[in-house]
Amino acid sequence: MADTTTESTRPTRYHLATELVYIDGDAVNDNYNAASVPIYQTATFKQENADGSGGEYDYTRSGNPTRTAVEAHMAKIMKAQRAFVVSTGMTALDVILRLVKSGQEIIAGDDLYGGTNRLLTYVSQFNGVKVHNVDTTSVAKVEARLDPIKTRIVLIESPTNPLIKIADIRAIAAKMHATCPNALLVVDNTMMSPYLQNTLDLGADIEYHSGTKYLSGHHDLMAGVIGCKEAHVSEQVYYVINASGSGLGPFDCWLLLRGVKTLGIRMEKQQSNAVLIAAFLEAQGFKVHYPGLKSNPQYELHKSMSSGPGAVLSFETGDVAMSERIVESTRLWGISVSFGCVNSIISMPCKMSHASIPAEVRKQRRLPEDLIRLCVGIEHPDDLINDLTSALTKAGVEVKSVEASSS
Image (tube, rainbow, N blue to C red; front, top):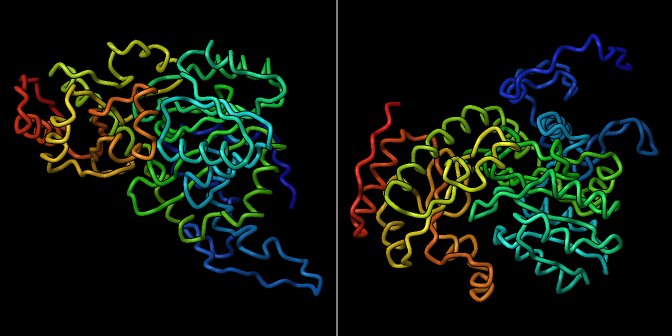
């Protein structure tokens, strides 16, 4: 039956914290009105006619009711024309990069997740695609690489991983669209999540996420999410997903949908913890990279685009050996790659998540070998700060007392 409800009679859009929890009733056709979206754990669907017609779904590679539900939910949250869920965050980027043809060019940041750098290196070596790595905090440097004919994608992170640098998404979008009408601005918004930043509203054409991080929140799932602003881009993305068979499986779709419901409360707690920890580390004299500190030169720019600074920060000690001792002396902070989990994580990017970037390239891009990245969880902030205090002390740092939290 056609939807005859007019726009004027639709209910007012809820606050985002509510939208995260509320699943639209028409997102999945369930005859039993289950309170939780059912898991359609099936590869194929029976058809009514000999020619294979008569059913909305035929093969889960092409579509599945559980996947439809989570994609509709993500499209709503991301304010996308259409959203897609795939097997990992890197799969999401791989799908997007298949929109680039041989002879075309990509402009990407010079401070990127190691896996992103690895995939861009692959397409530049084997797909005939030129990749320019530039400092995306400078709109002028991005603009200098724009080519009206060759530029196909401008790929940015904001904040970047792991130096937490901020790109002016609005300004880059305006320059790119004016100069390169056929180019796409693609933003990896994983670090902020849709709860804190909506890049499609800021001018991006595609926003993508590693659903493994904040969207899931528990590191028990691998997933990728792609949100498209325009229908013609959505159609191209769906064609690649269907052709390659990279769509997310039904059970993982259900896990992702469950995780997204608690994104708001998790992010609020993780972010408030991160603000306290960043202030603590700055008080110790470390160089802290975090847009929630007013001392950060990009504080106002980030604030103009996002509703919060997030829960990932990094800091420099000035000594690789000291950084290693700090990391290995923590107890609550798990040594691990990734971020966005309810548990706090500590790592040295140059030895872990970004180790695949050659040392000479890391040096060229000014990625400090002593850098420590903290991905803050939902634990009590006093316990996290006390654990860091103990680790710093064991590493030989004379810790200055900082007023404890009252939470």
